[in-house]
Image (cartoon, rainbow, N blue to C red):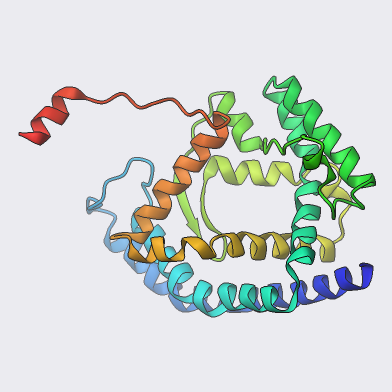
Length: 265
């Protein structure tokens, strides 16, 4: 198992290096276009005018980089190759190990959000999967009915009343917000993330990215068939953030009946 893990980490590091080279090349080629577009549209009103997305004109350019270049030519082929050479049980084991490294952050954020039960479950999952589950390769805790809690620092900030901030499309990473970005950085400052060397950190990131892209394979047709894929992904992103923040029970939005009647007329 260790030999397979080392081989996968070396392959992951190579994929990461290729991704970064492609990303830097693409960004340099589009830098002038992006900056020019920003300057020329400063005085113009954004046609879409989404208050969550004040940087939409720039974000759509970054979406083009991701959707038309990085994904079809780098990330998707890398994911298909990873799926081809790595058996499903091994891929699941690697994904479990990555998720297990996040359990201490889940536990700490549970404390910060006042969720004692969530904290206890995350702590139990980390102890069980790190020992019986062989460093998290096997998700034994789930079979013991200890479901993963997924509490991150972005949710903690949301519980504390901090807003999302501007929506941002990052090349090579995808959609995020200022709050989510701060949360991701904070969650990597906890144990055991601070113990990982650069190779293991890169391996964790790449395996997480490949696993995430694999899970999106089934959604490709839905995305491609949408009238505006950029808006589709943005709405899905915010819906998922609300779902996580409210533990699967987001508040129902009130319907403006007067506006609805006016629209129907």
